[in-house]
Amino acid sequence: MKTAVTLALLISTAASAQHVVTPPQRLCLAAIVDQFRFKDPASARIESAATWGSTTHTNAAGAAVPAARHTLIVNARNSYGAYAGAQIFECLLTLDEKRVLAVKSF
Image (cartoon, rainbow, N blue to C red; front, side, top):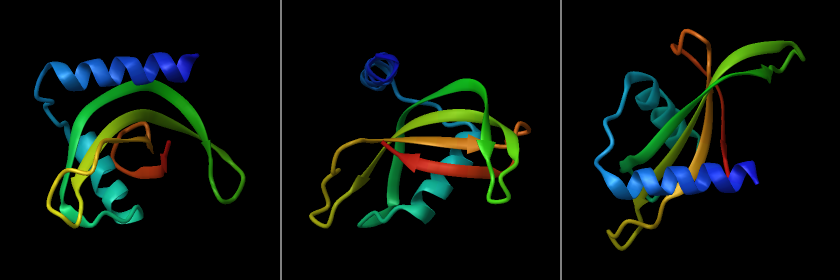
């Protein structure tokens, strides 16, 4: 249910206005482009984004690390040159929002 509400909120935000991208969101977008394969990485754009406060992330050593949670809707061009359709990603940053801890796709 919480995921459905999150998706509805992000989609309605995407349809309403042009999104202003913040530096932490740019950092997340760079990590998304680096980790996931887009046909045209240079065309990747954030259509909508939301910040959901803090959470914890378990690092490789098994330690719980506090993290800032961002959800982004990203779209990029396909091999035909058309935008392929938005995908939802979650990005966890350090609390100072200077470093990416993890990125995942939904």
